[in-house]
Image (cartoon, rainbow, N blue to C red; front, side, top):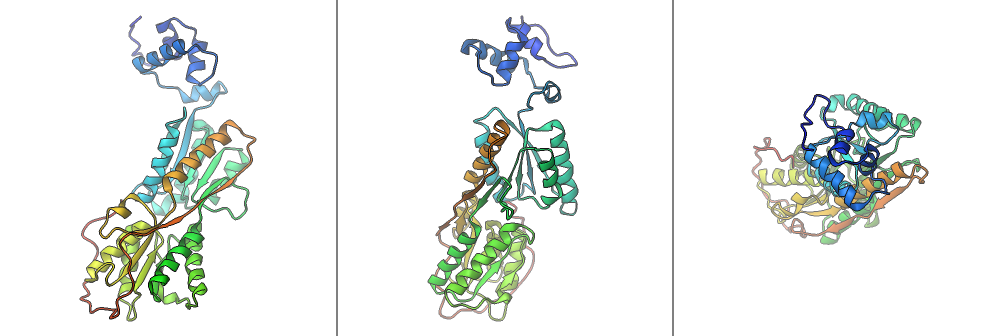
Length: 365
């Protein structure tokens, strides 16, 4: 008892078994979550694991035909509130399982295809039991490989037009339609729209929802009021400046993400416009920052934490029940009305002192 286990190979299950006087098979059953171990013995094993600093050898688990009990997670970046809130839900859900997370972030935009594909290759080759993919930039580059290997995966916030892939997604079209209708009901007729990243499925879905609301109220779609964004603060800031300095500027702007909407807010202030007196602004996502900015942002909530948790639970089900049918699960959106919108001012647009420059600090939240 109490012997020194700090050897070059690290602590093994044999060391744990010897420490507390049980078989290494018993230790293995506890570590793999199997039944048939007395509660008192199970606790002794877990206490020894913590005391000795045991770390599972994932490669050895795989060679023995077991699971790694690791879930891979690919995200397109960690500098925005959208991803962080999804991760909150995933972390809460995974804490209730015996799985760990292995996170990969494809940071460099010019090399994302290479990064994401190489990450998937590593995961398929034994690092993980399954894969969560959040906002992938090039999913088609590796989805086929996942399918060929029958490797469990779930696409998060990504529609599946084929209808045969495991997907968690928000009702983007309906959410955008309701947000646009809200602005129309307030009296706005010139409503600017900022899209997300061009190749992401939600971008077209939200744009179509915006168009559908205009058509339903007899308003003509004006392409001059639409700007390309990227879901990020900087994209919203630049697009907001362009829309707000048009000769016939919009009285309201609907941005396809909260990060972009916050960028629009700063663009409006740069032009000496008051929110919502001079310009109404709506976002999409309902990240934590939406209720912290001033004025508090009206937005479309897509329950990101709930979406992340649902995706994790779906993936665990596929891992542990390989015959489970593929599902496409929709998370309903809802409009959250706060303080950033009101009816358009009768004298709009007000006089402006335009001084356009990049913001003094970053808002990658």
